[in-house]
Every structure is written in structure tokens, then in C-alpha cells.
Length: 416
Image (tube, rainbow, N blue to C red; front, side, top):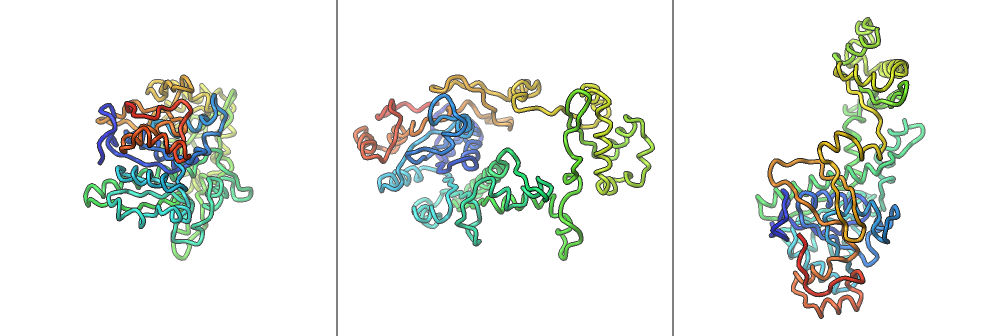
């Protein structure tokens, strides 16, 4: 591993340097998680910046709320990689890196000479992680992919919409799920490198990742060859599986185990249902789940949300209110575990950000840098590579390096 950028850097990934050549949601989320764990993440942006900088408005151009979340803890350098000097700088950054992450299509990074084959001779210890839309070995490899595309082609949209009317999950669940798989793959490759001394290429395609994600519970009888039944999982496919209306709101209620159903039947004054042949075991209950979920929907309006939560909690039945995003900000549990961090951003002011949800008993991550302005750290990064102030000025003048108007072009003290 490389040396930490600052003696104040903490976390289990302290000392790991990541060169992040990703845009939009998936790649930046993966590298943001690594930054939260202490990695030194250098975000390499095109002169126009990551397109996500412009999403959701914001107080200043290029600093939208999604960007502030997905790029917290990183440094930014804005390079024109179409210029030979820009590409030369990227290679100098890679020479001191542990991980290189990109979500470009294979055609694009091959054209730039950034494939693993191109890099492994000069950077043999580098873990080269590629997060494309589709795997490089298949006929879809050069197709463009966004979250909606992958939700559709992976079967998620059809499953979400009960197949008759496909529907997208409102949050970019494919982007974020693949990002998590990407982090796991990168960490596995780093562990392998510690044993072998050699880096490797890691490909985490969105389509294959989400297809595998869906198959876990949705493959059904098609697990067997030849198939022994239909695809799908009856419980999650039930149209009656939804938040249930109470006398004064909505609750999520999940009655699942034998003990929980016995308790529920007693709560609603129908203990005899436990002997009903349709409901005696999880197998029968799953086959008749629509009827059971309709029973829950019919009975919950008879009491208030608070009354149901009390009696179901006492009976060991999971029962929680339906919260909106804004409700999370004041949730008593999230407040108790210090889930939200107050961060002072030099241009955007006071921010409230969700922390890494993982707790480490040792090497706990410390505070991270706020999300960077476009090219904010370019001069200081070039200084660490041995560039003199005059050379930095020249790169800015010819358009290879883009920096904010007030950037310091000479040596700077690295932030902690």
C-alpha cells in the first residue's frame, strides 16, 4: 500500500490510493465508500466535470446535492485526456496508485490505452477495476447503460411492476447495488495482491451483477434443469404486499414465522386460523399469501398506528411506520447513533451528510475532505508529482489542466 497522504488519515483503507475515473452514480458511489473508509481518492474529471455536478440545483454551479454526497472525501483534478500531456499526468498518478476505477465502455478505455493489458507492464501492482454496463465478453459490451436500462434488461422492472406494467424503482438501485459489488471486488483484489504481490483486472458489469442479484429469489423453479416450476417468489409478488393503512396512517407489517403468525391470529381474535390447512406452514402460507396479506389489510384500519406498533412489538412482529426521506432527518434511532454528520464546506456552507453506516472497532474512519470543486486539487497533486509552479501554469494555459479561478497554482499544504 502507499503511504497515507496525511498523518491524520484514518480508517481501514488508510494508505490506499484510488484513482477515480468514473462519472454519474455507480462509480462515484463505490469510490466514495472507499474514501469514507480512509482511502485517498483522486477524482479525475474531464474539463467539463462530472455530469452529476449539475443535478438537483445547488447553491453554486457544479456543486449539486447529489455530487456533494457521492464525492465527499475526494480530491479533484480536471485533465484533458485527449491531450498527450494530460494522459501523461494520468499515468504518473497511476504509478503511485493502488486502485484505478473506471466505468467507461471497453471501446472507450481501449481507445485511450487504459485497458489492463496496456497498464499491467508499467503498473504491475495496480488493481484495475472496470464497472461497465455489460461484460466485455458478450455482444452487448459496447452498448451504453444507465440505471434505467439495467433495471429493464435485468428483469427488475418487470418484477417491480408485476410484469404486466413494468416499473422502475425510484432510486437508482442498479447503480448503487453494482457499486457495492464493485467495492467488494476491489477489496478482494487488494487482499489477493497482498498475498501475491501482483495486481489484476476486475470487471464488475452492471447487467450480469443485477441479473445475479435478481436470480437469488426470483429464479424459482428455473433453478432446476429442466424447470420444475415458474419463476418468481410468491410472497414478494403478491399485489397485497404493501404498506397497510391504519386508522391514522400507514405501517409496514411483516408477519413471517410460525410464531409470528400464531401471535397475529391471536391479536386479531382468530386463533383458529393457525389450524387452517392453508396456513399451517411457511410452504402453505406462501401459496396463499394473497389471502393472508389481504387479512392484514382488512384488520389494520381498526386501530391507530401507535396501538398496532405497541401490540405487535410486544408480540415480536416487525411493525414500523412508513417514513418519508425528510422524516429520516429527525428519526430518533438515526439521531441516537449519530448517523448524520455536520460538515462545513468552504463554498457550500453547512451540510448534513449521512455517515458510513459501518462501525469498525479499530481504525475507525475520521473526518473526510468535503466534496471538491472541479479541479480544486490539481495544482497540489501535480506538486506531489514533482511539477514546478511554472509547469503547472503552462498546463493551465494550454488547457490540459482546469482549475477554479481562485486556485493556488504553486505548492500547497495538503489538507488533513
